[in-house]
Length: 340
Image (spheres, rainbow, N blue to C red):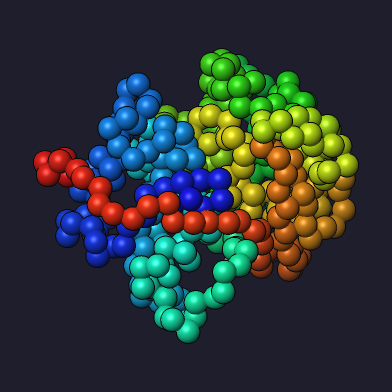
């Protein structure tokens, strides 16, 4: 299925082999084989993956065990070149495809099926999302000083909303915010710097205890850099004017600059923009706001969030964005019986 700007292989939980219906090694090995990982050449020729972070994804759905919910949704980000499935976060783009899959597979009651329409996704209490939970700002600050040995010390907003994210100022790390994929992904030294920043940020956020653990936690946290609006040419060739956006954001996923924007990172952007004095908020002009339109490598996206200050703590009740989704194919995927 395609959901937003991502693509993934979706399964009903009870369609999986019995030993893969529970979390663990068998499930991970099955999904690795389905996607075609690990592939030392980074192509995923022998599987369903598309050899990018946006297309190396799996989803498992089941009728919900919780009251007032239709389905339980589990997302796994499959490493391309390593034998590893990261369950530590969500995929906001593929969230848009959950409803479509659930409807077409009989997981939603007929009287709850809407007419064909825009897929509006509402992330409720996004700071409580994911396995880590915890405070929206893990350090208690909207801006921190992040020291990265041998690279530098940078201002950073460390936020847990939608997905744990490290926001930096583009100019402070040598960029202008208009970069496209090749500008970053063709620079091996730059990618190594971003990964080191990500590792030290993960420690500061309390997601890991030591930077050596970051290699086995590629999906979270994300690292992104922001700047004030500027004119640029998107990867599609479309011109994005300075007045078309409130700010510019570029984000890395699984070690590479994303071709557009991860959905969960968009939630983090909307949430941070709604809270005064975060780096995202300041790049967008500061002050209070309930929505921003940001520029990314492929174009622009609008995301909204409702932030409240309750007893001195910032709380976001809801973040909203719109996506589209569709079923690409349905059928069987073959895997060797001894692979899981």
